[in-house]
Image 1: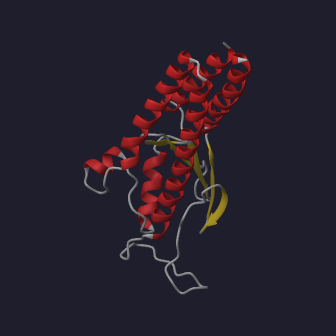
Image 2: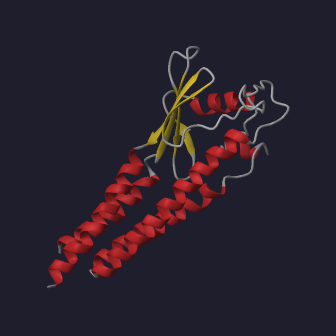
Length: 205
């Protein structure tokens, strides 16, 4: 019975991603009294610290030649293509959360382990996709950007890739990138499913 409860909880925790952000990028600079924050959800970008953060970051990014952020307004204006991941991730999360709850009611430990393995693979793929997204945004710059800075070491245009995890200094900005509440809840859900497998095996004896 405990294993079933753990598995159902795993599904409910995963479903929390429909509300909580999974990652946050914060920018600090002398000209901004308050930090700028970008909360990344499974289907959209949201202000991380103050109202209008997303738009302010988008303007700063475009000033140095980065592509516009995939906000609904920018997509509607034709400034950027819809972000495919924002269309796919809600379905993936919804299906996996539903399966976790169903598997919990079925009560077979091998299904718990299968769910955990699939979630681990999805998580690795998602982290790689996030890193690639940051790389593309930071390196594929508009050659006609207002501000163009050359890297003194290479002589090539400077890249502005935010850190995948941790801290990075970009021009006069201090940039921090860390998991948010949703990522921790998802991780807790995966831990519950992993323990549910062993608890279920013990219960079956």
